[in-house]
Image (cartoon, rainbow, N blue to C red; front, top):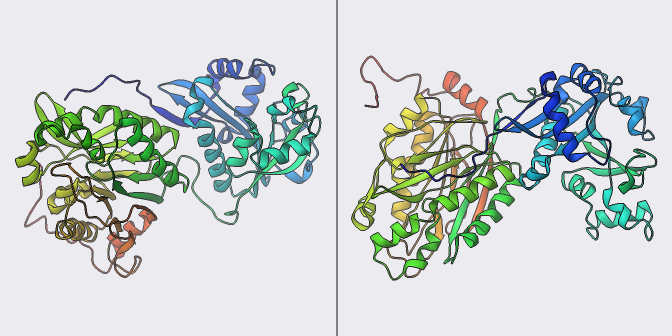
Length: 509
């Protein structure tokens, strides 16, 4: 099928290596040309050698675009009064102490062309994760206040910081750090004398690790607790792709604010634009709507990277080579994307629009394990969920569109059954409200939910969360993949383990 040519991103968060020096030096010269430029090679070598876990980079298709450097210190040795050169040993990190109690932020920088993708936030999140994983008490950093130079004649540094905290003044560094959960512990004088924009001042920032007593896997390991966000989408007439994307971004921003790993939208999420084609017949209208799909997908893909969240873009019509399909997009936060085509199209989709069914079931690899997407009617065919589970899917997403309660109940009860019989998690969501004059899409009924297996480790009704029917809202819930291992090996009933392959098999032709 035809694919539009767009700028393809492939973001990768990884640890820096000694071989990265030349590229990291180029990046630092871009960012710090007015502050001394790049680290010398022997400084960089010392940083990597002493604490390789703390030196993190983001690359896009192999190009280094953002990085964060850190070390572990016994904070009592330094206290709150120190300079940047003192605590970092002039950049050589000789004070790094693997037995220390504090992660200290040495540096963070993002290529100017990539500052719209919130990569700085992603790096801070990675360092917070590292702080948790190493069971450190806190994350401390000395923060520049480069906006202070404009106010130095009228405000003291302390007053300037208060104005930034009160959102009266925006500082490109301090505002960002406050937004990322840091609080100002102290004002530092003479912290970085070469920083003329900050007049040599800096804020001593602290993020407290509330999970200090816990032990968790190291950076980059597979996650066991996955946070799902589900959007119960209000259908309302919209007049442009930009308006639809802004509406979607509101929910993506809200769900990402809870550090969710996935956000799920309903089937035919682009339908609010159907009103633009009221003068057309239903088959022509849906094909005209399909003309927006690539633009919407590309806009949502940018948001997946910007908000650091994997997006299941419900579904949208795709018209290619005179064939109409119903397709759901997995838009990964690393900038890659894949499609799942609806396999079982409804009688109504065929008779009203001429939609064709897809011919492949995909199990997608993500940074949170394997998932599958079953679009609405596909959830009512148990073979698909079983095949996906056999191939490793642990979470199944079901975007749906239903107009009546009995139609909704078919999707709900079948999806609930898929979770129980396959010992997996299933998240469903649909749209609510009305679309006047949009033939075949005029009324909606939905109640989003997240289902679990039915055993002692799960809710008594095997429902992790459910929305209020016919109300625009979101659901947020955590799913624990370790519990799936338990139910599959030690559960009261073991549906997957107790199949009889000696009598029957399920195969894809």
